[in-house]
Length: 384
Image 1 (cartoon, one colour):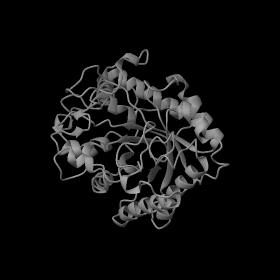
Image 2 (cartoon, rainbow, N blue to C red):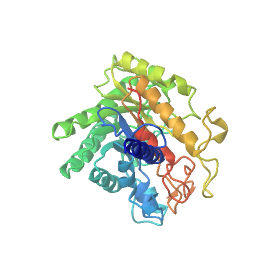
Image 3 (cartoon, rainbow, N blue to C red):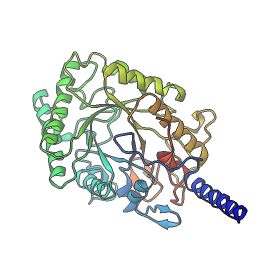
């Protein structure tokens, strides 16, 4: 009898291990991290538009709400970009509804909070994409004096957050600008050519977040976002002396094809920023391909010729890369990671450059919309 019980026990253990490995893709149990321990984030800015233009997301063989999928797989916060007046998004469809405006973002925030996740609101302070190559002010703010521009930044930021807070949708995190390497709302807000004026303008944005948070039950944190870690040190140096207002988190984008920083060195950069500037540090954008194929006629953004050695463009390669990057951030004392547009699957959704997706090879879903192994990196058992 004792032998039979021993055999049954071993069989049960083997079955549990098998089920665990099938679900998680690793030998460790799944871990759901508290956002205060380490923030697992995903930028889902395109999701509402994709759902309204034929996109389908599938988990375990069933069509499923993508917000629910990300919550299920360990996402702690969802990031949304906000454009000031993106009329061009409606024009792509012949007029009507806009995307990435206040109403679209409010819907995304509501659906995110309904699934128990936090929110990072990314103010672009532009009608269109803001990044290191372009930081154009909204058309409504053209040719304003620096003082009036500062008032516009403050009022827009404060009023946006107050409207969200009044509906119980206050974001837990707010970015004051997106990849603002050259500054924002150029030319007045040029970081390098007019540092004092830039500091004055960004301080108005930071103050607006603080003032809105002071009237809310949510203690919203302020993030400043730079593209690529090799640019962070020089960007922040001297700004405190120039009067930069108190902020909470340094965030940077880290893309393998555009950064000179090796994957194995990310922890060193995170640690340096944390120690030098006395702030928490997060990677606010990253991505890695799971395939070299393309789901549609829209050319893909990421350059497959620059893959990281030992990390192939496969499901397993993407998963392995994200586990390594996340561990690097943790080893450096970082507080979180956000994957940029893991749900930008191919659909009938449009941009200025094409219909479908320029990122379908980097998503957490295959070309039929099924969840891929890469999604499991958020619940891997990391070493803290």
